[in-house]
Amino acid sequence: MSVAQILQFSYNLGAILVMLMIFLSLVRALKGPTAPDRVAAINIIGTKTVVIITLIARIYEQTYFLDVAMVYALMSFITTVGVAKYLEKGALD
Amino acid sequence: MTDINHWVNLLVDLISLISLIGGLFFLFVGTVGLLRLPDVFTRLHATTKCDTLGAGLVLLSLALQSAPAVGIRLALIVVFIIVTNPTAAHVIARAAYQTGNRPIIGRRSPDD
Image (cartoon, rainbow over all chains, first blue to last red; front, side, top):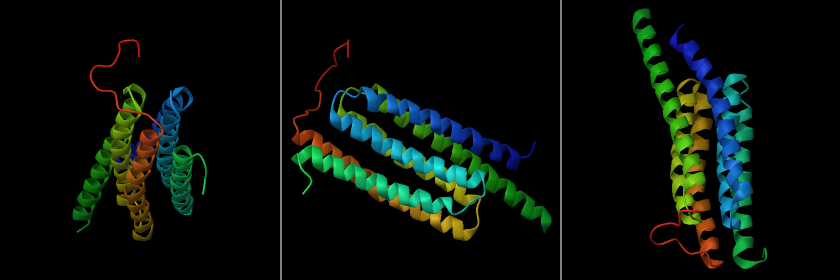
């Protein structure tokens, strides 16, 4: 078994492990005592989703998934900033 | 000549594998910090740095394995994550502080 085959297997295994970490982060998003806890957990889930999309782009050899990952990172950031502003001021203005 | 290429490819594969394992380790450490630490500020402290480094290492591992055009796009994603992740954490921490959360000083209660 060559190093390249081990690497290919590791990308598959890594995508599964990141998926399990997303479920662990979801525990904090469901349980979190305060609203900022939930926002932080959702932000972390967004970052991990970007990682999982790029791993899937490598596994299936589809390079346009990287554009999807970039747009997902942008939307995740804007969502986080918007919800945090809403928590802080009570309104979006 | 092909012998040198073979060894260079092997070295790049090994660096890529080590970088992938390190990235997954840091992502896991960030998740454990999110679950185990006592209040919002310590959770942000754990997850922001660990997730930024973990995502950067996994995407570096992918960039070493791909063509230059794909590598540039992966580098753009890494730069974007490095810029936005601490900004988001700062905004969340400021919102938490303004709405009345305060950091826990001293020992946490055992039933928390």
